[in-house]
Each structure stands twice: as C-alpha cells, then as structure tokens.
Amino acid sequence: MIKSPRYLNVKVVARSSRQKLIKIDDHHYRAKIVSPPEKGKANQELIGLLAEHFDVSPWLISIVNGHTSAQKLIKIDITI
Image (cartoon, rainbow, N blue to C red; front, top):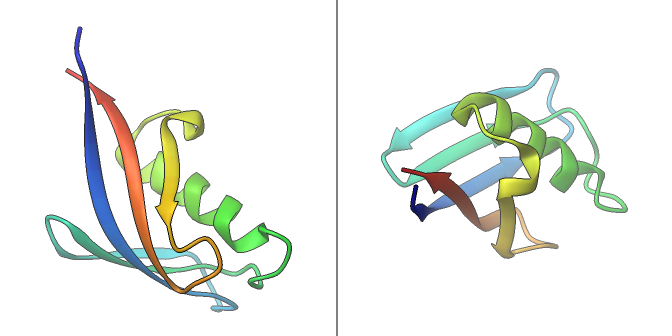
C-alpha cells in the first residue's frame, strides 16, 4: 500500500445554515459549514466534513495553508 497525497483548494463559508460540500472541479471545492471561524471550530468542522465525503479518517486530512483564511489548501493522505 502506498500513501498518495491529494491536494484540494477549498473556499470555506462559515456560519452557514447547514453543512454542504460543493465540488467545482477535481481540485476545487466550496464548503459551507455551520461553525463560526473562532478558535479553530470551523477548521475542525471542515476536516470532519471532508473526512466524511472522502471516506477517510480525519487524522489523514490536514490544512497546509490558510488556517485563518476562508481560502484553504487541504492535504488528504489517501492509501492506494
């Protein structure tokens, strides 16, 4: 088994009325999340949403860039 990282650009819309992940193309997504962007709550909810969508454990997902920004670069370690 080989771990192959996948990188995604995700635009986060915090304080949305419901959770939703919208695919724009293979590497670009828009994520609507309920949590406010305070104390890492929005980032944790985003990681959970992505883990559910890609059917991977949350610890395989990391924010590479954009911890305090709405535009984020996400790394997902996928085993092939």
